[in-house]
Length: 179
View 1 (cartoon, rainbow, N blue to C red):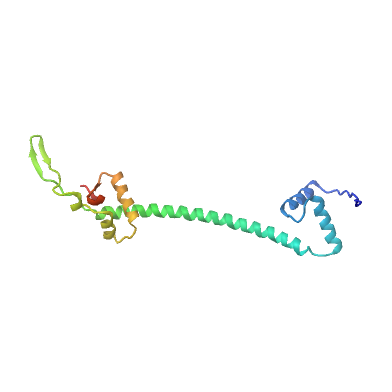
View 2: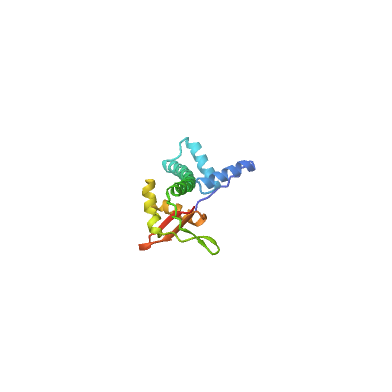
């Protein structure tokens, strides 16, 4: 059995707290007593920390740096996604304006005089004959993104009374504007 001697040391509470924090942040010191023994031994031997001790300190620093980099990357990715959403929303508005500009106007039915005044008959043609499909609008605009064009046309159809749509043959959807 080894005989141990106890040495008491007086330090300010701030110094003790600083040392305890160092122990928490550096795994090469198990506790406060171990840290003091390591420091005294180094001082007496007049040497630098061992490779293992240096490696442990460097590993901790590298790990902390990598964590900061990872957090920074997460923040950048969040910002990029927000910018992409903003750009998509802005381009969606551009697609809406452009699509509206190229849509054909629904032909007017014949106006006849009825017992209750003038009445307009249904248009003489069906939507496939005068409406445009998503592909037609995209071709007309010179755009490859059919999903964006479809979203823009659907928004115009859903949100305004100026754009109408109807299913035609082969479940194709046709769009046109009303006057």
